[in-house]
Image (cartoon, rainbow, N blue to C red; front, side, top):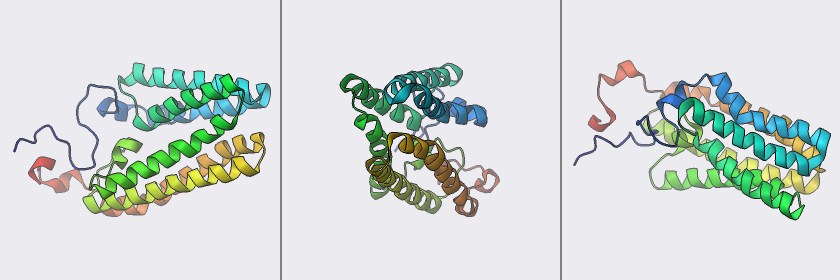
Length: 217
């Protein structure tokens, strides 16, 4: 059976053309990549302080579009997670402005995190760890490593969804936005760093592959 064009199980696509992330996206400066991903949220925070939630939502939508446009211009690829999040921002942000109800923008983190958590768990159930695609991962792990890391991130995404529901339902709008910036971002960073030992244990070294391609394994 011909499998020369099929990427390794759970790994990102290897082609350099198309809409989603690929080698060019992974070659982007990591600090610039981080700025493009969290920049719109920081803009949202400051805009809310000065213009209120509804104007901030409109500015947030514009910042998301600008971030995606810059990513596309620099790499000719779009990372999956910011792209999916951006689509939800545009839909629910639009509803927020149209109906003048901030409920919709508050639901956005719940929907996005729950979606990623469920997709990762379903992928695991089907034997296809999707974490490299969702997080634009650049490292290579063995199958057990991908399964463990994917499960952990799936649970983490679901926990974030629950936390968002608790915060927006029990706190003020300003407190919710502060939680998004000063709660979600640090929690995600700490969680990601805490996975370093697992990544190091299961990392597949290039020199240890003996030149074998994923299709030959």
